[in-house]
View 1: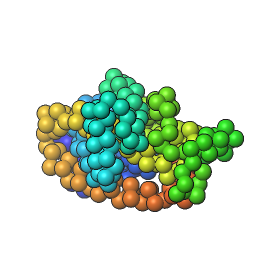
View 2: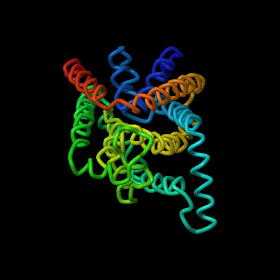
View 3: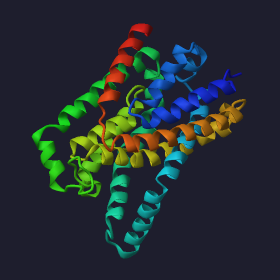
View 4: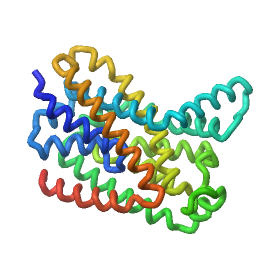
Length: 296
């Protein structure tokens, strides 16, 4: 019998929805928040096939729905452009090229996730490990901001400038397919509890000359099919015996995750028009080190 109450489902759903898009790792926070609140049964449940993993399926679906709703105009344009490109057998617009870049970038993390997600979760979904990787995540974010200032990256940023943004940065559709693969490969890091998918993807985009706004937009668009696929792929867990006794809690958690993800996306899209990853990097360092001390 699970101990997933509606209160716990709401708390975890809100944190999941917010931290999935914030560059601070939703998986890491799902481990650390449960441990800090004394919900040790939920911490243990994350390390194997359990009701909790079935519950997380619903949260992923809720988060993906929020992203689809927020970026529906982008996806409508991208899917339409890809369909026209398929009919005409050529890339018909920047939106079509962006769609192809997203497809190429999704493949590496998708394959590795299918093969190793469970094994990595079993090994590293522990409070101390999550805190250690959260600290590493902070170093990655701060390191990305330092790399962004290098002359070689500045040269990339000015090669295909965005005329409507004061921060130097190339357009997303000017990325090569090789660069898209590199950005996609970095998502694999998010399989480790404590490493943020959006954060590490943004850093990869920044080092390829994107500005913060477009790096965030590309990261969010790229996360959408991955998160949705993770939810759909594991949906049988929720519908099967693992979901017994938690399906209604999962529905409630998914609704709160969807709201949290929508609000956080709206905030971050505006935030990165003028701000950087520095605050999140500092937070991850402080929180990660504090939690490492707490769970040592």
